[in-house]
Image (cartoon, rainbow, N blue to C red; front, top):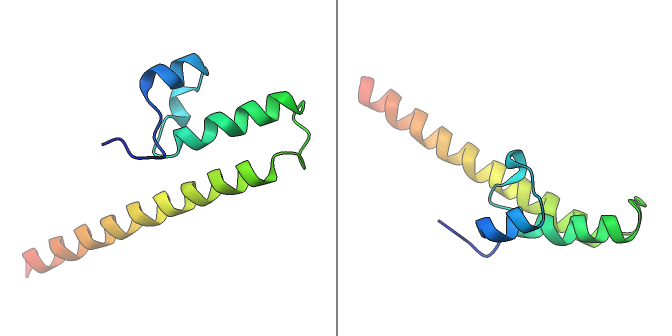
Length: 80
């Protein structure tokens, strides 16, 4: 289920992405981490990359919550 925001296993391994961050937004985390390392983790340098990554994380969260709500609704309807 790879999307445009999901990096391949080889890319994630090459950039040493921890397992906890290997999710739907992993392809956006790679350039963010590269920018952070290049700028010595100065907080104001990588705003665009950080915003893009955080937006992807939020949209993924909302997608999962909508799917869970739909599943719960289906379960309650099946009980009745």
